[in-house]
Amino acid sequence: MNRREFIKLGSGIMATGAIASVMAGCESPAETPVIDRGKPIGLRFPPVLQGGTINASYGATELWPGTATNVLLLNQSYLGPSIVLQRGAQVNLNFMNALGEPSIIHWHGLNIPPKMDGHPMDAVPSGSNYQYSFSVNQRAGTYWYHAHPDLLTAKQAYLGFAGVVIVQDPEEQALSLPRGEFDVPLVIQDKRTTNASTEVPYAPSHEDKIAGYLGNEVFVNGTPNAFMDVQTGLYRFRVLNGSNARVYRLGFVDERIFHVIGTDGGLLDRPYEVRECFLAPGERVEILVRFSVSDISKSLLLESKEFSLAGSHGGNSSHQGEELRIITFNVKSESNQDLTIPSALSQFERLSEAGAVRERVFPLTMDHSRSQGIHMIDGKVFEMDRSDYQIPFGDLEVWEIQNQAEGMHSMHVHGAHFQILERRFAGQMTPVDYGWKDTVLVNDNETVRLAIRFDSFKGRYLFHCHFLEHEDDGMMVNIDVI
Ligand code: C2O
Ligand code: CU
Ligand code: CU
Image (cartoon, rainbow, N blue to C red; front, side, top):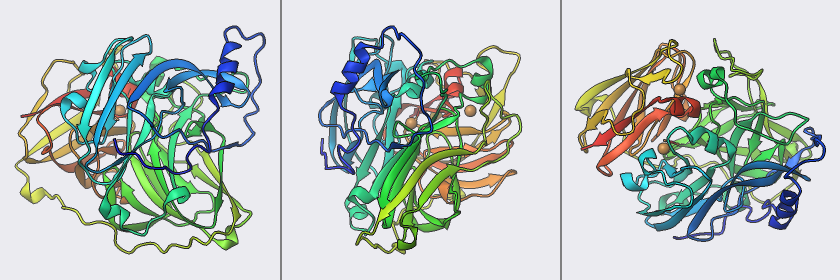
């Protein structure tokens, strides 16, 4: 594996010694610790993977300094290590499962063979390992990995089984984009927290399984109440929505303009100016944000702005569309980095309806008379061994996703990227819909049309909702590329 020095290396890695000593004392807490949730915490950066093993275990970490919280650790880190790969690199990686329950790693957005993709049928029991070996053959961009075992994906991802994968290539490296400390991954995840407890347990009610498990507080790179000290200049933030079911409407409190430069499958053709963008679970957006001299000594809050959605209340007081703070950027000092925003970024093939061989319709529906398998794709609830769709290798298809299942859904495809053609009945396309995608937000009562071509590998992949409670409920189908 080809590894490179990464952004803010080491600056936020928690000391393992401190964690170990806290863990020793957390077996039977004598008193309930009280968390000062108002205290800002410097943004953490998971370590960059420095070896061929990812070891998953349950353990404790200091989400809030000085107190231990039970989470899921990857190589003793919360969140999982970041992985930086060059296009063309060979990845050899051993997944060691020490969770006490089955698991498997899925490489979200990577074009790799079915046996490397982390289908739940390949989940390994605790005490076993799974050997990954694949080459990186795709556009530079922000991808990620997370757990994908049947029925346990939501719990494991919520508790920390997730990390960032960054792919670089010469085309992207040749552009004058922010690098080094100006290139920052932001993994945003909502959690349920209280002042009285350091635990963030995953315990969805029936209502949560329907609305999704929504939290009241957003963690960034595993950091609650996060802030980051920045300098003046242009920053590239790689924002990944790693939440189970939370849709964000990202924007700065001061309504400043920023530029969308990339989406799930890498760079767009050019930067697009916005003041806000939606980001659904599983989606990534890369944005350029400028902090100027007049911002020095300001604290600039990136938040999720309020939006309204009928029937969005889950089993707790949190609801989809509520306003949430994400991270504060404290502009500290002047740097000599003053990059201009490139006018052009990347050239890529445009898929259109015209060349499509066939069209498929996927109605998303719900059946409230059931206690599980409530969410369906085209009337189907996930079955591990059933072949749901047979898709000829290399054929361009149009897929029409019709949301007749109340609320929002975030539909994700393994094994191929697609391009969104159209949104009908609920809204317009925005820059987060542009370019190569693997995940798309489908709004309430909306129909989304996309063009897709499976031309990487044959075999069994998946199409599912990335609201992980919906996925675990069975809102997932097998896609066989033949
Ligand atoms: Cu990121 Cu099958 O999912
Ligand atoms: Cu995926
Ligand atoms: Cu869903």
